[in-house]
Length: 281
Length: 276
Image 1 (cartoon, rainbow over the protein chains, first blue to last red):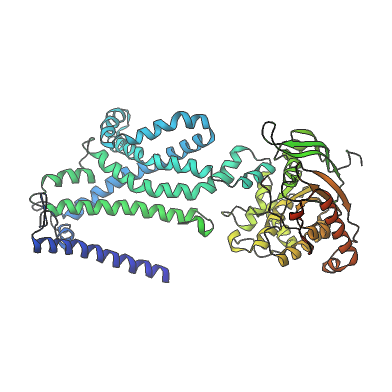
Image 2: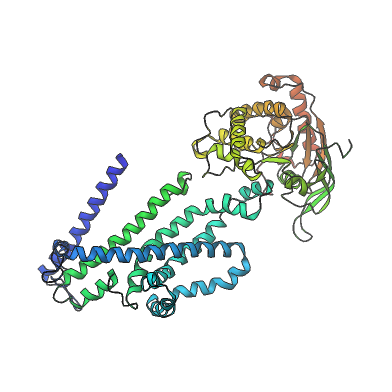
């Protein structure tokens, strides 16, 4: 309980400090008429935080719903894509990691291409995925299903790498013990290697969770999906000169979604991983 | 002794590491009778841990014959004829104490109710009643090692292999666990092969001590320990105990120990363990 109170207190202090930095820098920039290249601190480049938050509770267009209502729907839509992508990517990444960990030959043959897949910018891959995947999807999955695949593309890689590392991190005597019980490799996998690898896998999932949100947002752009956060970002980008607060507000919401995904993984880890204190965190 | 009757029978067992490399064990002949408590003692590099692993089919000998429970070492392992205890408890920390003890039972396909009953029995045997739902990291080193012994004995193997199980514990805990191990040995009727580099521990526990010498590892002497059973803390103060400790130490010296590694005084010879 005490620990929880400290966490909440710390969160508020850091939030206030970040707020102070933003507003402080802006006030300083205005006071000394700071210019860095084209950059100038003003309402357009650095809107006040209270204006950004306030914008959420303004109508999104004349006589329309509040911005926060529009963004809430967009967030749910993007969250659905990202969650599907995250699950797909995590499962694919795990299975790939297990296969590569068990075969040095597969690892030497395929790992370079898996690494290469991550060096191609997602913006270059996304349109191709949409073109290839979308026509094959049933109606219920059209468009957002393709975005989930793009999101999975960003998710699987850290999971594969850490699964491989985790599965091979097992104490050699723990393996000897399994051998003394005449356990086959399938039993060794599920009763020893996977439980031992869980802290590694969860570390990867913590990286993958926010990445899946980024993947979903970027994936919406070539798929021309208007109903998600990616569509909202494109839209408000066009009105940045007249209403910079709106784009900042979308960014804020997108960040909150990423944080929510991260926290969901943390909660999952607490529920699943039962390890000595030095293995958790 | 007839090879057929022995729980462990080694004939001309040799182990070298690497191509034409170091000879870790040379021409080992040894028979272990049912119910015996045998200790392998020797300095670092004498191959005693390797020998134990050869018996358990965790390491293949380069040549020679290994018979365990009347079959090949490999078949004995596949039939789960032995339990093993390492220097560290090697408990799976994501499992509770009870789940650790039942791991070999799960692998042997026992049903849940039978597993539960046996785990309770084992917890009582090692005097850890009420600790079943704890996780390993919540226990002291001595308690963890007791869990590890309970796990090794849970499926009632005919043979128990122990690789310096108390080497990482303090002297007082070690002596208490020595006495407890003897009590468990008497109750379970298992045969025990025990690796140690403590002279007093080997003498106190064993019915027979196998003295090994290094470079290459070989058997230097066999010392029968004729101390009466049951043994207890008083046994360590009997004149016969000291005579036997002295004899084991003398055999170790004759076995070609270097002068500087022969620890004087005390009943202890503590040397760093080799990596098998």
